[in-house]
Image (cartoon, rainbow, N blue to C red; front, side):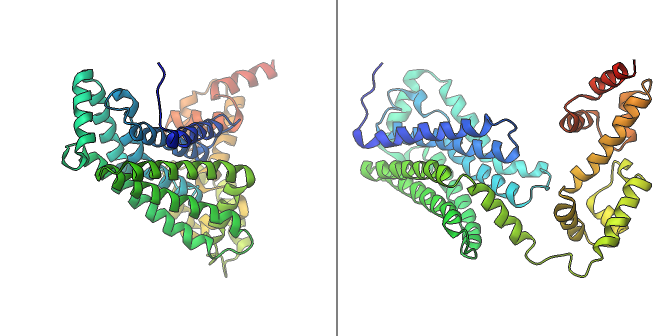
Length: 366
């Protein structure tokens, strides 16, 4: 099947391909971390959104309804994912909280609606989409258009405000960091232009919005190649702002370090599965903020990783020295709250599961 597309929408489809490549680049790294996965998700959402803008600009959905699948879901998803990516850079040690899933509720709702819609008969879908294109403001699906545009705008505006607060206070790397402000501004401009162009049935405005997205994605692609350390610079600046007003001023660093080592190595405090940042800080006679900064700056680990280092170290000793001891018993003895967490952390630290480590230790003894 050969589709005929308008020449002025070719950049839109080209940039959607770039977005997909950038998404794949992030997840095909040797050891992708949480930030890489979130960054990849942002680009994947951009791929779906830009592709959707292209097919809508060419009025393909009424004829081929599947071409618009996940368009609204991606619009509702990109803002929350970008928000979580930003917060991951800002607070890398902060654990994910279950209530934060509320950010993804609109995207989940859109996904269920779109999936259900695609399960309908083709004639039914074609009639609905034709009606939506003919009178967007009066169509029931306009609710999804309005909500998706509003959601994307709110998240992007919030993050633009955050970004502006960082960029204009930096002199030495302003060029690199200014890129993220340009990206956010173009994204907001694209959302507004696409929304107005679609709702008011102004094809030129909608195509312009799609091409703004194309410029955005091409800028990201070129900027990412021009400044390969851009994300690291952003992370560094975020961390700098986090600790610009040091919580450790006046704190006896050596004393805190000695007492901390006494607690973890002498008293084996890490064995307490319910131990949290505040409890440990209280035992050190400092605040939670001071302990968090101390661990990040002086030890190079967040609170949870710091404890897990000692837990895994003792687990390795017990697995090797006491082959008859139950692995689950060891898991709880060293301070882990569940076997799944124990297995996951242990494998991340050693490259082996606890059972594999025990078997290897037994072979070495033989």
